[in-house]
Length: 443
Image (tube, rainbow, N blue to C red; front, top):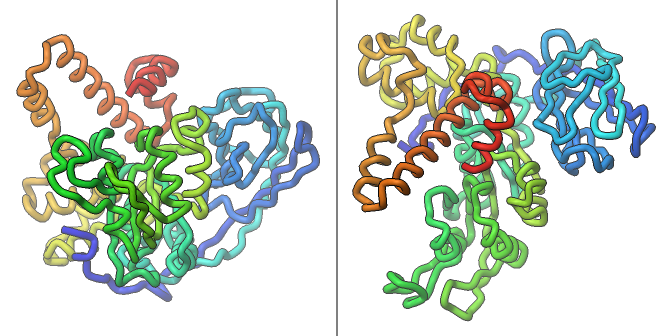
């Protein structure tokens, strides 16, 4: 089932409460930016980044500060300060912190700078949509409704957009909604997933190839840029794109012309570029795994999708929407099932919820006997092992691949279960944070 198969659900208007926001002021007390003040109107429905990157709401020039050093979010008592695995750490009143609640007036040290965070105790109403959906995107929570006015503006424009978020948060659905709500709606919407194509074939997939350009190229073929002419090209999981191809992609985006592999003719294209990633591209740039010039070209506008666990009230709405879209009788989706869905943390986000609803519809009461955490991920192990056995590789090499795949999946699962927090994930794995990061870097 594609996103286009989903039928619209009724729009919520008067029943949707206003979005209230709490602000804060960050003042640089000492350091290269001494005297600067950053007035933040809203830390309730969005995360405000602090670091060197130009995309940060609190942007510092201190070279000892990481590109994405920390984040400010709202919590029940004030403002939550979260260290984003910074190189030099985050300190509050000289105590190193990873995740802490600020009441206001604390001194925060990052790199060689000291900041004071003052919290506005009052709240104010933010601009937010009264609707519970934006085209294919469904969600009535304040976290989602706050995004809809921005999505409407981006849909009407032609600028590149970078969509960020955890696996399963609906990045492709947002990209398709931007396409369908914009002036290119009658053109093609083409998706290229960087994780599904061999690195040796990536260039031919994107730009096309001429006959005989390489072994197996028995005929000329248009690339995805040409396929998307007049429409939108979504480059999914762009953080996984091989760095050797990033310069060619940058040139294609800047000049809007491509040359097929094995050819010598440049072809003009008219394509809107949307990119999506589960990775922290600021960190990838800092680690020199992603080109900074390509990053800035893609991130003209950025949309950060919240994980489902932060979308208050959306689980029930999404469950009912998926149930109806899959042909279920609304009367047979019991309050007990909805409550069980609401109480679960959904590390796999909206995709995991969709799978759980589909399973509930197919199995009924039998689905209730199995815990949610064990039922939503399709078994991949058998296919991987069978493929490795049939590959004929020597046993030591095959064993090494099995261990690597086990580590990759295990670490990914632990990160999902612990909201991306490396320290907690490492503790749950029973290994040290440094060793966790070392394994993660190898993957």
